[in-house]
Image (cartoon, one colour):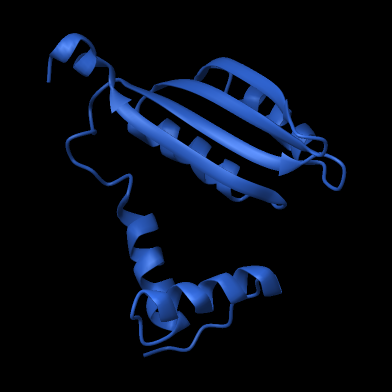
Length: 139
């Protein structure tokens, strides 16, 4: 097996080690391999291909120490054809939440989420995707 070096903040590494120990993994490499497989396959759901989708992406970041807000605004404009609504909200004294409502195909939504995930200094990113034709119980 090839050895890969990955840089991450100490806090994330500690969380990774704790997670591995608490969930019975043999070590951090096993956790990273599983997480990588999950990340690479999450948008490969054949049931979502060729369908119109709606999605919600939530991003949390510390506005005092980063320029994430500016990066989010650039992505919002770059993907104006995909983002049907956008909400910016203050959370506590130091944090902001960006909420993106998306409508489009799997490829565009997965590219948008990938760019959000690639943005440095985000604290949390969560999303969900659902076919539009499921609205009203139609599957």
